[in-house]
Length: 75
Image (cartoon, helix red, strand yellow):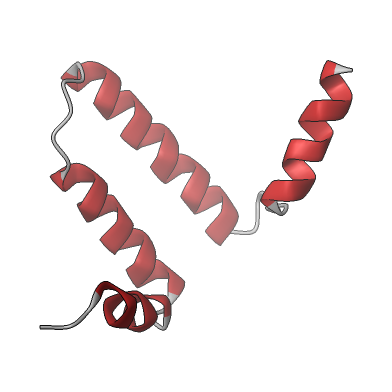
């Protein structure tokens, strides 16, 4: 059996589209007591945002930069 570290290395070597699909499947496999309508809305929004990034409509920024922007707004 492979270790989590080995699996992580293999997964991170996959193309981003495959990683996104795997991430989606892993999240779906978790058991949450969430209203199905709310879950469907979040899934739709996540796919929309993913597609906007993949299609070049939206340019992502690093998480640290996003947090810095939020902190500046809150000051």
